[in-house]
Amino acid sequence: MIENFKNEVNKGLESNPKTLPSKYFYDKKGDALFVEIMNLPEYYLTRCELDIFQNKTQELVDAFGVKPNTYFELIELGAGDGTKTKELLKLLDSENYSFDYFPIDISSNALGLLEQDLNKELPNVSVQTKQGDYFEILATLKDSKKPKIVLFLGSNIGNMTDDLAAKFIYNLGANLQAGDKLLLGVDLIKANEIVRPAYNDSKGITAKFNLNLLDRINNELDGDFNLNHFKHQPEYDKNEGIAKSFIESTIDQTVEIKAIGKTYKLAEGEKIHTEISRKYNDKLVEKIIANTDFNLEAKIQDNKGYFADYILTRH
Ligand code: AVI
Image 1 (cartoon, rainbow, N blue to C red):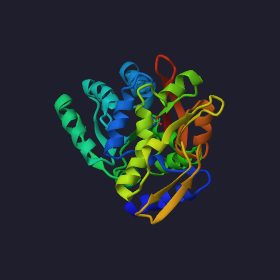
Image 2: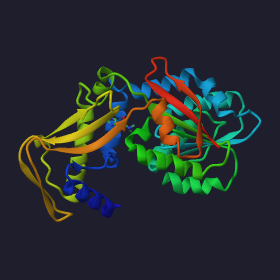
Image 3: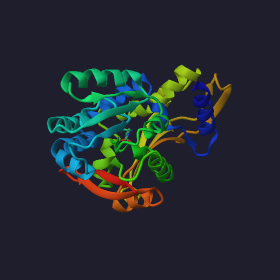
Image 4: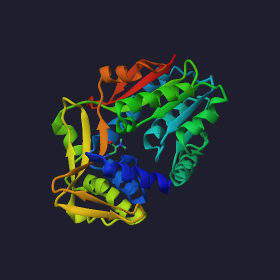
């Protein structure tokens, strides 16, 4: 794990332009900052998808094509605190659907809390938490041959390049059977005035979240990044439809990462690219799934039309 971190940091800082992978945002502090982001007035994504789960719940269930008396497995990739999914579980529970809920997460702590919460609030729902890598767990669930619905919410797919997203969805399909469903939650392409503040909030939480990556390198790899000499630099243009986060060096400087045994030079104004958050439309989703085993079944949007849950069927 630490070896991968070292190698990826070194590779990214030796590249031109420099990059660092966004997956390393999520240490304990990064997780807490992301929770703060989800509650920010500017960060509409979470609220919009929650609106779908609260107000379009029946539409979601209809698109899944499940019946109360036919058992299915509801699998969630990266369940987090399950706030949105709970809305769906409530409806399935009250209408006596027969299913097990399998939340998969890398964090056993998050899963423990979710299980406790659901056992208390929805005691009739069978919750089977699975800690670990999505694909390793899906491979084990594949053996059951039961109908499956996979949830991948929050526009998490948007943190992948389109090529990686296509591979990811293809691999999901390889672990499913004909008729199984994938619910893909994505943020939609929209005006700069709406997207830009979501990645550059007035309280500076997103800036902290981005710069925390340098802090993590300092803590875990014995680096000497001085956070006062870097700033959060986000970009979004509607024509491209990708929000990008950079960390910009505000002076000419050299940083040392002792665990790697190397120094890296940064010029004033030089940027390290840390994250992409792709925004979508129908055409892009169609293009991404073109070489996978999924068809587009339905698109369910929030009341503002900012966010969409696409339901895909494995053919
Ligand atoms: C987790 N992911 C979908 C978030 C996003 O919107 O891309 C991460 C994030 N980055 C900055 N703010 C939130």
